Amino acid sequence: MTEDAAQPTQTPKLDHRRLLKLLGGWAAAVLLPGIVTINQPVLVAYVFWGLGFVAALALFIRIARITDTTDLWPWLVASILPWAVNVTVPDIPISIPVFVLAAGLFAGWIFRQASASDRLQHAGVPGTGTVIELIEPKFAGAAVNNGYARRSVRLTVERPDKTKTYQAVLRDLFKVEELPAPGDKIALRIDPEDATRVAAVPVAEPHEPDDEAPMDAEDATEI
Image 1 (cartoon, rainbow, N blue to C red):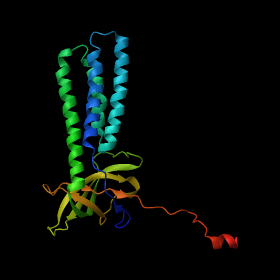
Image 2 (image 1 turned 180 degrees about the horizontal axis):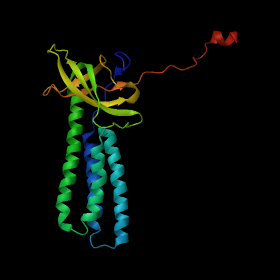
Image 3 (image 1 turned 180 degrees about the vertical axis):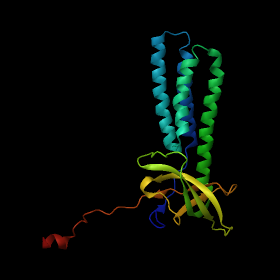
Image 4 (image 1 turned 60 degrees about the horizontal axis):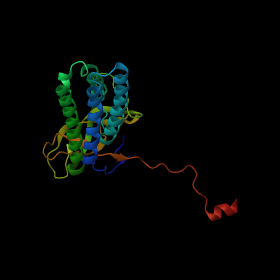
C-alpha cells in the first residue's frame, strides 16, 4: 500500500428501511419453524426446520453484504440460533420469549452497528492516518472475502482542523498482499464525538489500462 496508489471513493448510504425488513425476515425465519412445529410429526418438523434454516442463512448473507459484516462471531450466532430454536422450542415452549429476546437483541445490535458505521462514513470528520504498526492477531487470521484479511493498525491521526495529532487503532479489511506498513497513509473518517473512533475511507480500485491500445487510422493504413 502506497500513499498515492488508490484514491478515496464515496460509499453509498445505508438503506435503513431495507435493512430493517431483512432483519425482521431473518428473525421470522429463525423463530417460526420451531414455533409452528410444536406437537407436529418429526418429518414435518424436519421439513420446516430445513426450509427455515436455508431462508435465515440466505437473508443473513444479504444482511452481511449491505452491512459489511465480516467478523466470525455474528456468523456463528446466525448459524447456531436457528438450530437452538428448533431443538429447544418444540420440547420446551416456555423458552419462546428467551429466543425472541435473543433474536431481537442480535438484530438490534446489527442495525446499530451498521447505522453507526454509516454515520461515521458520511458525517465523520475527514482526516489522514499514518501507520505506526500493524497489530498482528493473537490467533492466526484467516483470509476472508477473496484474499482480504481483517487486521488492526495503530495510526497517528491528523485532522484538517489542525487539532493536535494523536494515536488511534483502525480495524478493517485489507488485501493480504497489501497489508499496511509503517509510514503508509490511509484516508480516514473521524467520529466527531469520539476522536479515537476512526474508519478507513473505501478506495477505488486502480484502473488497469488495456494491454492493446486501439489503432488509429494512420497505423491501420501503414499495416
